[in-house]
Amino acid sequence: MTSTTLSAALASHLAAAPLDHVTQEYPNKLDHVMGGPGDVQSPSALHPIFYGSFDWHSCVHGWWTLVTLYRLFPALPEAPAIRDLADRMLTADAVAGEVAYLHRPESAGFERPYGWGWLLMLAAELHRHDSVEGRRWAATLQPLADAFAERFKRFLPKSPYPVRVGTHMNTALALRFAIEYADLTGDGDLAVLCREKALSWHGQDRGAQVWEPSQDEFLSPALQVAELMRRVLPPADFAFWFRAYLPDGLPSVLLQPPLVTDRTDGKIAHLDGLSLARAWCLNGLAESLPAEDPRRTEARCAAERHVAAALPHIADDYMGQHWLASFVLLALAGHREDRA
Image 1 (cartoon, one colour):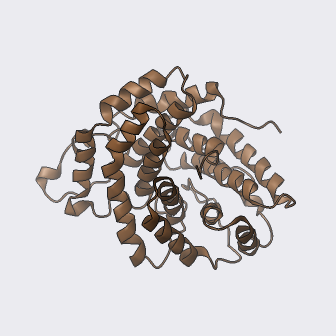
Image 2 (cartoon, one colour):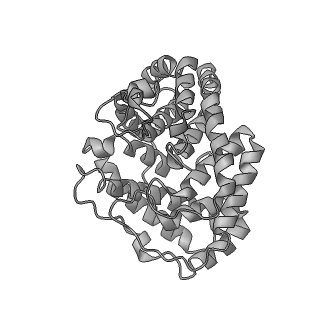
Image 3 (cartoon, helix red, strand yellow):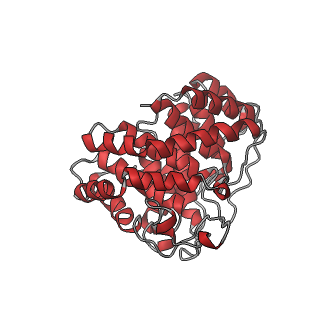
């Protein structure tokens, strides 16, 4: 089987879509609780930076895609456009506007937990940059990252249960992203809290029931927990945990891409994202299992099947185009530097 790699040509293809849609205001699906008539405002009035890409969180991970590709492929033809757009959009005043939105009493649950995790992933990526502009963007965004890190610190201690669905409420994905941010930025309090919560929620998970896919899932409930624990546990401990988590090996339903019947339907189009999210988790699993474990090869082959199923369709319709490039990048490069 030929492995799909993140080539310069593919990187250019992935950059093209978010370059357009991170500033495309409409159509737009707001997560916005209104406290009065004065709160009836346009997306760009509410969110000075993240008003495009159909919804706030997709705009955030569209930016993550752009700045990640900017770092990994500095000679990318789209690199100057990415730099110019970031210089124009990622300003102190605009970040202050995003922070001010969070301080509204009505915004307490805004984008919890999916958007929280992705904003910290964007901040983590910017902390990897060595360029002058990358360091400037990281410093400019930091007040917003601090605000979301603080939200995690308030939310996790009062959360005795995880959310295991395959959509935006999934807590394993949010914790996984928050840990990456905490490790990269040296936020020891957040790192300890996230790891303690991961162990509390999932350390004793045994004999996982794999009831997927559901119709509108873009995350694998089963594999997302494994990806979180892969990051939390030392390799030997993870291998022991994983044997108990899926004692009969990888179920066949996780090895075959889901059927996508209508890519113009926003919910059904989620299933292309599921293929790519599974590929990300399966590749991580293959890296973490012992060399002699036959599931390594099984996981890698399954990951390639999932990428091959979704990649040709990421620009078929705006319902997928506004977010799927991010998940391709996760699938192909999500473990390249996740501990750097």
